[in-house]
Length: 69
Image (cartoon, rainbow, N blue to C red):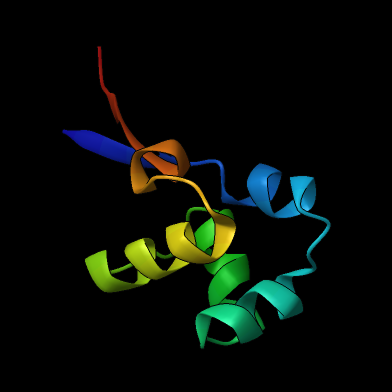
């Protein structure tokens, strides 16, 4: 079984964006950004690609699988 990890919070903070500002640019709610950052919500492919575009990084730089050992 795999688990999705993300660096969305770090990348957002690197750009000096609040959750609300990122949410507005990505066309989602601030709560959606919060739940993605905290691993509560796994984004759809479309949302993951949209977030990567807004952040300016490849989607693989924001989201990765962590294999269980």
